[in-house]
Image (cartoon, rainbow, N blue to C red; front, side, top):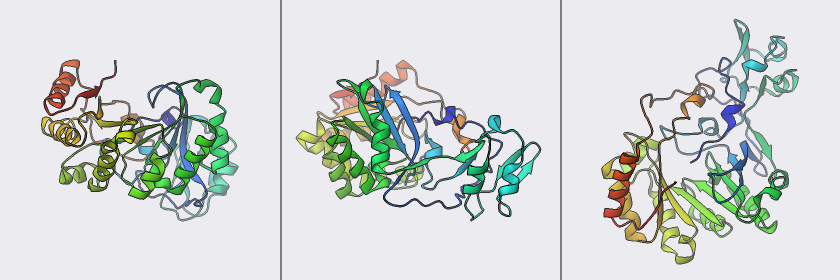
Length: 332
């Protein structure tokens, strides 16, 4: 999964507790939570694209590139550089929602109350929600603002988080995009209900699916879930002659987790057994994610991880070729 650019706007950390408490904020099924809209994206499919980052993910990968998109609830965040120290939030807060530390507020995510009054009342917008709720029509209107830039190959890519966690909304927005003549793509773990996957794939021009770890137990240790559902969905897609042409399988190269000779060989053999013509891309380790973790109230554990050299990447490519992969996607 590619990285969102939300850290450019939500990169201040003093107002966050180290907590996974979300404080509620369930959204009506007719709406979807979007934590970022990245315009003019060039790495999320062909051409210039608008990438929609849906909030919420059923996996907990230890190397997640978008930790701000993990929780399926809306959360308030604090941006210190915008705070004017007026303490309006403190006066608007219910008991224990906000406490003051030195010169800034600290949000108590364990509070069960809503934060609407605080968010609406902050004159500097230093406290705001980490995502927006959209109906299908509202999100389509946002996407179509960039339509002039899509030209021949560009379009819209749905990412996350996990797009399939938005359920029927994903199918509905894909259908609306196709009716509008927009090119569509998805970036997903494909940890999703198979019937939902079938509906979505029928509306997609490009499919980018993650296959991180082949071994079931090691996958569970690294991501918090087993991979049987993922493997079923990927096998179905790459075994279909029509669908497989639209699919690129991706493996993020994470030191100590996915980037091992055993895992690369295993994935290559599994993919080539299902379709020797499958397109497979190994994504080099992205070192930018750690900067987001404190903002998201989470702790980064891969402190010493670094991108792989060209020689190291070629080593993995050779293992893939030796195990039957004919179509490696190698970024120039």
